[in-house]
Structures are given as structure tokens and as C-alpha cells.
Image (cartoon, helix red, strand yellow):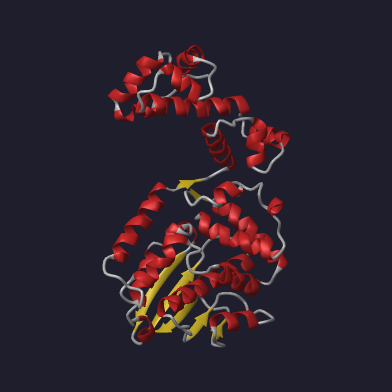
Length: 347
């Protein structure tokens, strides 16, 4: 899931009184990653936050709060796919086709169907989350599409009909206020929102020739270069890399970055079957290989950049990893394009 969408959910958690210590220990949830759109946050982490939300507020209220927090631009370039298209219909079709840039494509299925005078956007959430979590997610998605389309139209679009797989809540008020209609069907086969086709076929006042194509290319590039944080160990290694580049690498510094105590950090590394020393050496090895392959820096300069006492210490490390000298390894890396994936010798 994108950091942008994760931030929206975390902001709602804060609105409802869930402080960062309540979720910062989860994989990928450190503020550094939430605030950096380069990273993809694990869905399991966000789902745990959503489950906490479900224990505090009814699902219609959670969905409404998420929509309120999703102002134009909150989800990055994706938000502008709708407004930049020639028509609202083309915009929502484009945005749905690139929905994976903000959400996990494995957790949803979305269809846009034209049926005569009406257009229906259907949203499925096939994953096994708790009922209230799934209900709030689907309802939020429909409310988000309505908000973006209304922003693109410069006027509020009221749907013809809304269907929700959720059971009818005791209080419909937040849903009626969010959608602007009382035509809401509960316990339906799918969650969907239906608009008049004429409303979506009108030209977008923000459309500019060629802008949609440029946005699509940039969105696709952002998705291709995103860094997924799959596990706690991935998050830990990303923290080590970041602090290595800042020349501030220590167990205490990494622990602080991940909102953990040093002792807890060491326990988690032990559960992962690794150690602080092994992980630091792994990251330094990656950096040494990259610098040997991609730069003409001297061995002494590479040693300094990667935290080794001197060139001699670096040579010993390279010999231990690959059974070669740094100079021989550099030549091998440059001779073979795939040699950057050379397997190190067992430590």
C-alpha cells in the first residue's frame, strides 16, 4: 500500500486518539517510511491499524473520517488522474486502471460499468479482514471516488444509488451525509456507487491536452521504482541503509528510528535468526559492491564511505565475502552485467 494512503489512515487513527506508539512497532510504520512516498507499506501493518479503528468507532464513522482526510492531493499524483482527463468518465476509468499505485491490487477488485444512462463503480475486497474493517474500507473507497469526481466536476455529484455489502448500521447518518443520498442498500452482493452517465460524460474543466498521458507515465514510473517493505527485517535493513548514508550507524540510532528500545531490537533480530553484526555487514557488503561497480573511487575512499577503519580492513572483508581482492571483484562486476548479484562466500 502506498505511503500516501497509509498516512491518511494513520491520520484518522490520530483523530480517534490512537497515538503512534500504538502502531509504530509494526513493519514499515516508522514515520520515516510513512512520510517517504518511495516506500510501500505492508498491507498487514495498515490492516492492524484499521482493526484498531474498528474497536473505537463504528465503521460508517471510520469511512466518513477517511474520506474527510482524503483531500485533493493527499494520495499524490493518482488524485489528478481524474481531473486531468477529457471527461470525468475517462478520468475514473484511468484512475481505477492505476489504482495499484495507491492500494494493494491483491486486496481489491474494481469495475467501472456503463449501462445506458448510468455508470456504476463496483468495489470488491476479497481479503479475509474482519467484517467491520472490510465494510469501512469498501465504503471509504466509494466515498473517495465520489469526492474525486465531484472535485473534478467543480460541483457535488450525488449518486443515483449506493449498495453496500455491510449490514445496516444503527445510525445511517454518517453515510447519508457522506454520499448525499438516502438511496443506500445494505447487505448487497457487492459494494457499488452509481451515477448518471450524463454527469460523468461532461468535459472536465481541468483537462489539458497531453496531461493525462504525462501523469500516467509518471504514476507508472513511481510504481515501478517503489520499494516494498515486506517484513520487519526489510524495515530494519532499510533503516540501517539510511543511517549508513548519514554516517550515524549504531544499534541505538536504528532502534530510535524504528521506535524500539535497543533491547527489543536485539530480541527481534534474534527471532529472525540473525544478529546486529551480521546485518550491518550485509548492508556494508551491498554498499561496497555498488561502489566498486558504479564508481571509480579508490579502495581507501570506499572503506571510508562504508564504515571500515581503513583499506586494509575492507580488503579483508572482500576476501572473506568473495575470496577475491577488491580490484578483482570490481573487474568481475563490470565485465558481467548480472555480476552485481554475485553470491558471497558463507560467513
